[in-house]
Image 1 (spheres, rainbow, N blue to C red):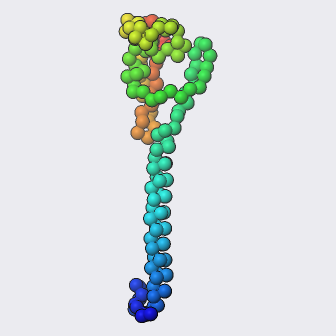
Image 2 (tube, rainbow, N blue to C red):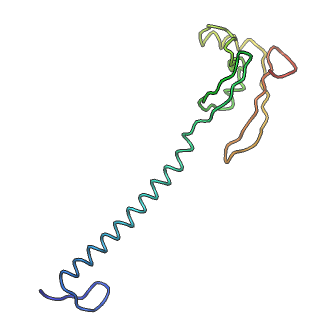
Image 3 (cartoon, rainbow, N blue to C red):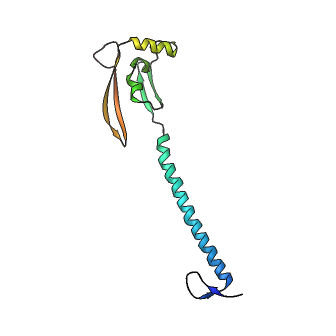
Length: 138
């Protein structure tokens, strides 16, 4: 077998040594690519997991209390037609969604919104509901 120069020096190496060095370099390159891929997968997981996390809320009503995890809604969901946010489900009991909306449009309930603070890029609000033209929130 003819000797040839190694890839990193001018010393003659045998064909077998050259092949082993070449395989080692390929293996190291694959390890680097694999490490970068694992870092990318970990970064994606860290970014998406908090977005999918559910927040629990503690609901207190005259009928009792419970924990639930409601889906996210725009602020207008909570401020437009406050009667539809009735947690006791007494408003328009056993009505269809259309009938409940029609009844809510006839009422003069109000919602007062106050900014509580920020969590990263999210704004946190308190919403106070005033039903039946009361001066105090319910």
